[in-house]
Length: 528
Image 1: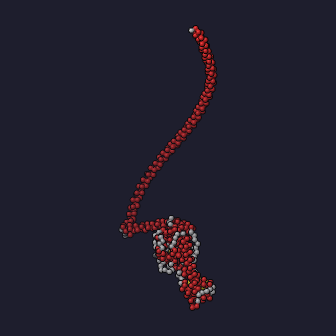
Image 2: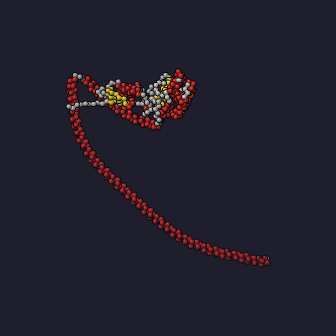
Image 3: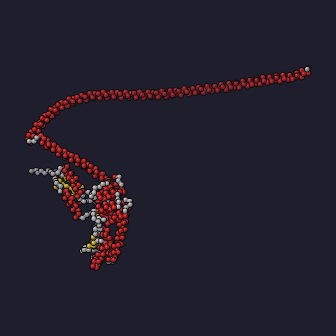
């Protein structure tokens, strides 16, 4: 047991020493830790103090900046308030001035109104007095008129109704004259406006198409190199001339005219064939029946080709679209037809172009207008070989080839034989007149010219009250002198209208005729 105690004692001492060492180590560690913590706390306190000083300085500076900004903002607000206050004060002052001025004007107006009321009152009093005086005078006048009327009735031995009828009749005549003058002024004004618009329209159209004016005349005389050639053309016992006339269907006139042979035929195509055949025979020198037949056949073939080419060219130039071959052939024949020296085909092309341009200006169908203008004289291609006027024949032709109703209407009405039923027909008639009336487009013989002037003067001279008539400007104008004692101004206007209708109905003429009725009063006195 003692051994055990002896053995346990050193162990206990060792344990105790370990415990004491541990306690000392713990105490030293605690002391060291405390020291380190206290050092850190001290340093942290110092850092915090430094941070507080910096923060205090920044806070002071920020505070100073806020105070400065606030002062500036207050200053700006004060300035803006003062500016608005000044503006408002000025505005109020201006309003006050305006109110004061308005009050002054109102005061002045009130004074003027008072003066005007006084003046009006004075005028009313004056008018009232004048009214009373006027009523008195009116009463006196009525009494005087009644007395004069009774005296006039007694002197004229007329009753009241008869006198009233005479007065009404005189008033009616005066009113008729006044109405006629008003109507005349209105008609003149309307005609002037229409003429102005028409001239503008026609000028634009003619400027758009200004074709050449070529006055042609069918050649019916063939010049010979010498008079001996006449005998060769006649031939032995006249066989050459008979063969030529039989082959061409013309009459050859060989008379005393030196070095010339006249070709006579109503058909222009046959006349042209004969003319060309004669020229070819004269140039060839071999004139005999067989050669004549050969030349005629050759010329006829050339003419057929030329006619077709002329028709095709007319259709192409006018741009009217597809045309029946027979119509093309008839158009080509118009190349050898003339009217007063104007080539019929050239005239038809010109009418087509002018009618088309007119249609464009007023919004109508341009192609239909050109087609109607191109075919309007188509009857002239056959009027020498068939009975009837070229208008009737032309209408039959375009009907036969089923042309449009506007085309048929234009053919029928372009000379006024029928009333136009479409705008296209009116345009074609207008274009036809323009083309025929252009300077140099046509010519006519002196006999026909004189007859036309005589017919124009005779038509006007037959009217009652006409003193003299004069046809001027190649029949483009007629001046009618009337007796002023028999025809007044209103009747002169009516006479002009009547003459217009009669001329349009009874006379045939190219272009237009201006009618001028002149009424003048001359007073002659002799001083002794």
